[in-house]
Amino acid sequence: MCRTLLTFIAITDREHPEYRVPTEDWRRSNPKGYANWFRSRMRTVFDAHRRAAALAANASVEDIPEYTVRTPLQSAIQILKRHRDMMFAKRSDQKPISIVVTTLAAHAYQQENTITGAIYRILAEMDEYIEHRNGVAWIANPTDPAENFADRWTAYPERKVAFYEWLDQARRDFSAAAQATDRKRIVAALQPRFGERFLEGVESVQRNSLHGPASYYVGGLRKSLNPAHRKAAPWRRVDEGMVRIDRATLRRDGFRTTTFKNDGDPLPKNCSLIFEAVTDLPKPYRVYWQVVNTGREAEAANGLRGGFDEGVVTNGRLTRRESTLYSGTHSIECFIVKQGDLAAQSGQFIVNIK
Image (cartoon, rainbow, N blue to C red; front, side):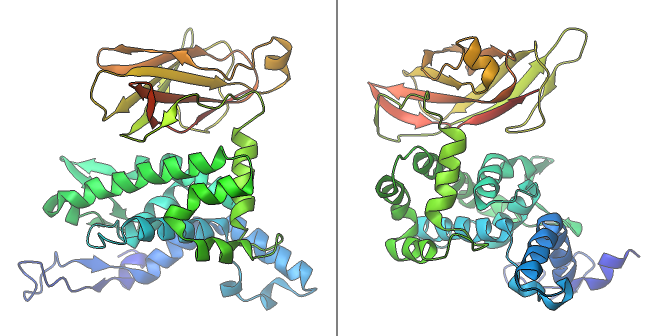
C-alpha cells in the first residue's frame, strides 16, 4: 500500500443512497495527503519567500514558522474565491465549491512569483485540468484518482454550468481591470465582484507585503499585457455572451502539427499558427481579432500591430491564422460584435517566440 493511502478517511455523504452501508467504494478523502500535494505545487516559491523572510528578520529559515509565509498561489486563490462568493451571493447553492477552485488553481499554478502572474495563469489554464471519463466531468483528488471532486456535476448539471459561468466572468473582470488606465477605473472594474471594503482592505497592505495590494497586481497585469500601441476596443461593451480561444496549433515544415498553451514555452520562428475560438452567441455577429506584438524585431519591422482585423467563421468555428515572425512576447484576442456593440471578449492569449 502506498504511503498516501494510509491517510485516507471515510467521509459522510447523507445524500448518497448507500450512506448507511459501509462499503469499499465509500466516498473517501485524504486531507493530509492533499495538504502535502498542495504544498508541493508551490514549494519553490514558498521556500524562496521563507528564505527572504528569514533574511529580513536576520534569523535562520527554521525560525520562520511556515504558517507565516503566504505564497502568490494562496493569495490568488483567496482573491478568486472572494470573486466567486460575491458573484454567487444570491445563488450560494450553485457556486463552485472551494475544493474544485483550489485543486484546479493549484494544477494551473507554475511557480509564478507574483499574484499577478498567478491569477493570470490560473484563469487562463485551470479548466484544462478537468478530465472527461466516459463522458463524465472529472476533477480527481490528486492523492486518490478514484475520488471525483466534481461528482455532483452529473446529478446537478447546473453546477457545472455555474463553474464555467464564473470562470468566464472572472476572465472578463480581470481583463477589464487590466485594461484600465488609472486606479479609479481599476476599482470600478473590480468593485462589483469584490466590494469596496475588500478592495480597501487589500490596498491597505504595504507594497512590500507578500499579499500584494489589489492595485499593484492589477497594475502589473496591465503593464505586461497593455503596451502603448495596443488600441482600445472601439465598441460599446454590453457583455451578452462568451467567447474564448480554446485551441492553438503550430505547424512547421518537417514536423507534426502540435498544440500549445497560453503563455507556454517559447515557440520557434517561421512557423504557422492557427487559433480557434468558440462562442455561445447566436448569429449574426462579426468577429474581430487583435494581435499585439512586442520586442525590438517587431518594432524595427514596423510590425507591432495592435489594431483590429475582421475575421471569418470557418466550418462553424472562429479561426485566425498567424505566423511566428518576431522574437518576444505577443498576444492575440478575439472579439464578438453584435449590432455595433461588443458582445463578448476572449481575453488575451499570450504567445512567446524565441
